[in-house]
Length: 283
Image 1 (cartoon, rainbow, N blue to C red):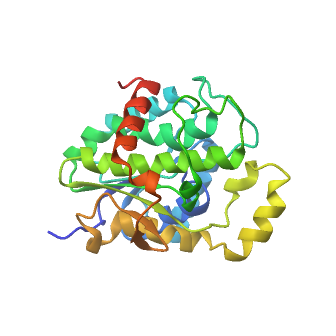
Image 2 (cartoon, helix red, strand yellow):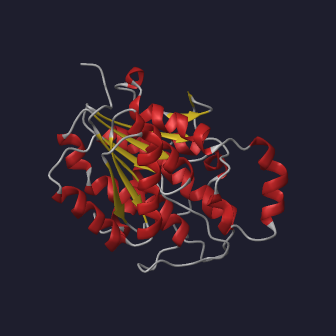
Image 3 (cartoon, rainbow, N blue to C red):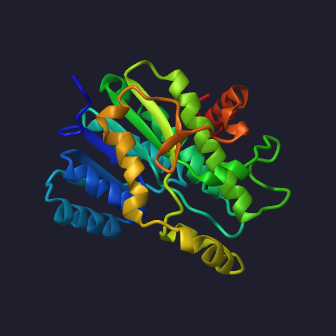
């Protein structure tokens, strides 16, 4: 039977604004049961109400999680598992940037912890449920910024000098490596792909330093796409029947393309997986 998202359950992190919100609207409109994850109760409830109003769907629910906290991610996974219901789509979208080096409650540099380790931990905690629910799909939102990313396992947290763009690029490189390695570790029936949604005009760069904002505005704003357009490929990877069985790919401009050479390094992806597992207590 061809893939049909109607009646399937999709969990979307970072769902209260931007592409996460727009993807929630479209998946609900297509008949999926949507679980929207946000950090703030009031904002998340407002987002759920907006999705219901815009999509005409009724089966839209809110869940809470701060992805900078491993304890909260584990709690989110427990809540999802306690539902004793299938999970067919997991969209890893929550993230952000920070103008100065910050540490999470777990003592990890915040950009890497939120943008990569959060995806890694939640996906692994829900892996068995996704496999049991197969066919299922994992969609990881990365960025074209991964092409400038590096990985230094001796200084993952930039203790030797923090730069906001370098930290962001590193986390996005980790996203692409993670999605590819996940595709190699999942059984048939569960796919894993990553994407660059476009330079989306959202508030993700609100955490950028003041000196960088004029540069971002001048260089990138004319090429920004709307959140609706940015969500399009994310929705396609989650819902398009034509992409059934497609796995281990990276998408830019709505098309599968080769990511950066570092992102295609399978040995690097395996090492990142092992290091990440230790950092989140899954080794």
